[in-house]
Image (cartoon, rainbow over all chains, first blue to last red; front, side, top):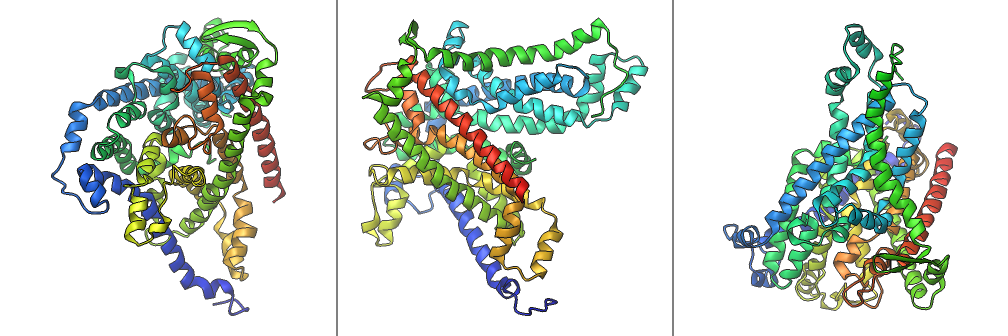
Length: 284
Length: 310
């Protein structure tokens, strides 16, 4: 130890502190994961087994609950709806967000500031609170109780942050790239499509993840807009399902496990991208 | 900015830029700007179901804030939102900060802990809500089952059925769901602190607590600004967890009622009283909206000034 004040608290505490930190982190990870583990284990049990031995390991060959959820309930339909709604929304968000972001970042114009302020306002306003007029607007457009009602809403919510992510990245690309292409006679759309956009895949991935997770998980807008069972998304369909099987806990846990599986597995496979994408708005 | 100097200024070029800019702006105007502006306007009208009636001025606002039936419900719910905000600031954001500090040192198992803490964050709030509702079940939930097996029968409670514990249970479920978010945002903030700064403080014999208080906390102030503002907006928009775990009426006896539930009941009705009142719902939404915008901006400004001071 080089410190003259030999017994500094920092050096003396070092070993116990490391131990304490380990204990807290392990306890925390246990609290974070154990509920998920119990959910999965319970899905392999009958309701009686869950009530009598809540903490015991199940017989993993007993997959009756899963078969029943997938075969006898509307869960697969909800899943397909969630995929369609999330996929289409992300596609629209990326197309529209890249268009506006590209124009703002690559072309000088007096309206750029106005456009950025316009999207900045959209970033701040919680659209949830405008759900009544949105409801009436969608009814007038004939979109109520359709998947499109969700797609346009999610696109509107996701667009502002995507414009900022895309503009922020596209601005950093050197002007020489497009100037060289221009001298060769390439048109503006050609420059955008063949030269600039292929370089913009990383920010697109960030924007896609940042928006896809909340859209996939959203419950509020389907609750208000969708009535027909076959058009419900997974989180909303889950409430219907939970209401139907209230006393069959084996089924309930199997339903929750199946609903949680796709995004959890995807997260475990792509944890770095998920964390980066989902905290992108708060980490600068 | 690396904007090219050789851009053509022809009509064709202007059309191309307009082609890029107009569709996103039209889309936003139709589905964000127009609904938000209408939300203000709707609050000044009487509504019969989905049909707009006559202009009634501030009547809906008076009803929401001072009316005999609405106001007590609204203020009761508002109070619960404030409780949730304060509790989550401490548990969720404060806990997130401490966990981030432990992770920052990259201890053994760092990568595992970092992935584990974020697992609940990616789950749908609906799944989280149902999961904890089952766990908190008075007879068969694992919380009470664990207490029974430890011989702590006296501690077992109908957590969600008891008005003294229900709101706390919702807050803890929410903290479980989201603590990973502030933790990893703070972690990213700490990783941007120049390591020499912390090294130097250590060599000066600064203890752990002083290091956190005088060096780390001030230097992650930008993360704090964003996290507190997001939590503020989230706490006053709170809806999914209460809806799933205790239902639309904020049972038992309104002890978990929050403004999001009041708004939904008023605007879209519930099973017991399926009366829709878009006028009053819009008035409540407008007030909530103004409250959030005014206080979130004040909070942001105050926190920003704090960032500069350090």
